[in-house]
Image 1: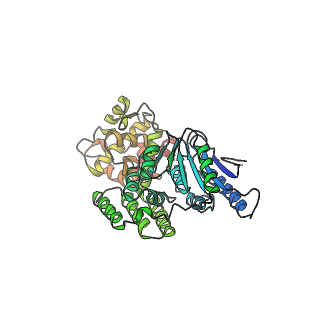
Image 2 (image 1 turned 90 degrees about the vertical axis):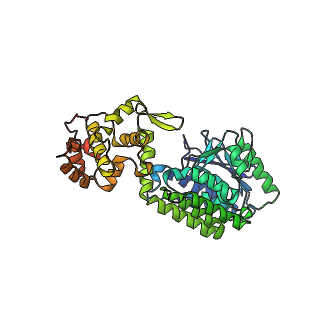
Image 3 (image 1 turned 60 degrees about the vertical axis):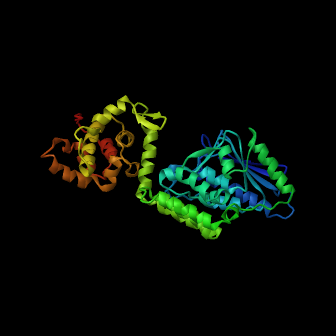
Length: 421
């Protein structure tokens, strides 16, 4: 059955629910609504005793060469009428028939959380699995941390959650996150497994609430203590939140632990670190390749990018703190007005990767807007008497009179300044 970004069909009593919202099968509002509608039909069919269309099992699959890259980051803190992913995951987990996820390509972030809500997971050899929420300063938001800990134990779960890295299908199987690495057709293998489980009358067990790895509570708590010591005074606040969530998996009933993790995720969404990290994430992906290029350890400035940095840093040598940020802001405003860069976020990305500016601040331009450009500009007007690098340009003045948005000020009317240092 066609249903927008989600297709369903039933074969031999097994319902296949297939994500089809290329290129990455992101779990945006439309996809979540379609998944919820598919679950409505499955639950209704199961509720009919002896019904001819009653499914015996469910396979979660995806087209487009990837299972799912997770939630649309632009929607993370936006209001929506679509069902939240945590509710969809809980409904999947509570189905009274076996649910098997068939992973091809990547199951990342919310995609991994969706797979973890299934009762079993099979993966193609080239599949990748990961929960990179920590990169944005977040714990998982749909129960992924709870279910990962239940399947893998505290140590392995924290390795994945605190690093944010994705791992191969074999590594995920070794950790316990998936149940098997199969051939290149994981959907067929998942269909066969669901049919076998249904035929044997095996009642599925929700992943959240499984306690096999929690028998050694002392060892679990010891692992948490060691992680907390290692991260003592870490500037990324979400790391401590993640550890708290894995502690909740041991100490609280499953439903309460899932609520605890959702609350931690919601609190982190309101943390300025999330806004800063998301800003840098998008800036890295929007900046032109002539300024940043992908290196073995991450993005690095190109020759052109280094040239701009030499112009973002001129006059800022030896300065620290607020005056350093003010000097960079003044020079960056000149570069923007001269058309040397397309947007202030490009300069933030360059500052992070070329000047060692903290990602947690979002870069000097994002940080200045958050802290308030107007107050900084007022101080710069006094400093300019002793150092011309602090001269307040027309663009900076226009931004200070609005909401601190240099790009919006530039769009409202290009200012006639071309000096870059």
